[in-house]
Amino acid sequence: MIAPPTFRRPAEEGRISIAPDLSLHYLDWPGEGVPSLLLHGSKSNARAWDFVVDASDLNHRRFIAPDQRGHGLSDAPTTGYQIENLASDMWAFLDALSIERAIVVGTATGGYMALTMASSRPERVAGIAVVDAGIWINPNLNFAPRKRIYDSMADGRAALDRSERWDEAAKDHYALHSFRELGDGRVEYRHFEQPETAESRAAFDIEALKISCSTLLVRGEHSDITDPETHPRLARYIPQAEIATVAGSGHHVSLDKPAGLAAILDAFITGLD
Image (tube, rainbow, N blue to C red; front, side, top):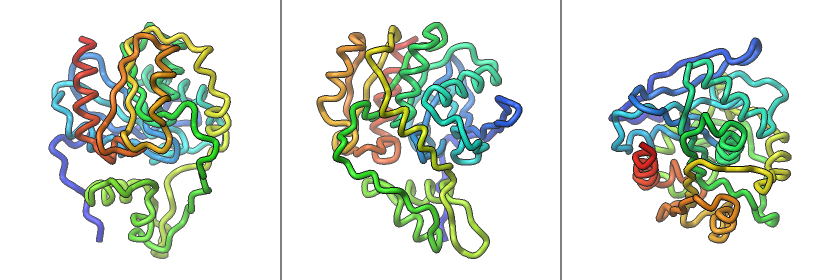
């Protein structure tokens, strides 16, 4: 039996409609100041951020983490998974919550979204943190299709992608929120397969973006997605960018080393005040 962990600062949960046919589930840690919008990666969900917020020393600040369309407990339309669509969802999400300006923190595909949002509506973005987004991903990497259905929750937990650096509590928590039970003992991933996202990542043109806000580029030390040359190269297009590395982490920084990521984000967020 998998037991959920106890958090020092548990999230409140909400659901909000952003279009006639699309509502998003989200986590909310209430607080003051400009809120931080936390964006998960493709084939993930908002629960990837629980341990980061819990490790943060900014207990007075507000953090919000939505499940993107087709992920977690949000609705899953059959189309609309280009990076631009996902970023547009986030503007509608912020509008629905009456949030005029936010700090945008995105991991993996969420990092592409953060860059897109900062370029398209800079007046609404106080700063962005791009966490192991790759941008120029090694074409020789093997991205085998993920198995969707497992015989049990324990089997799904054991097969969590790139989870070798997670502690047992992270594996338990993420498994509980990443799979739905099918009623016969089997479990299925809670995400919609979205080839549009992979296609738009491949066509992503960082040279066409104009990023003027404060920017933090974060890499997991042992990431197989973001190599050590990526962020210096990316900083050529974002000269104001700061570069940081989370020691001991792979690609899934928010689950590999949540306390290390929280410390880096705390300093960045505080520096924007």
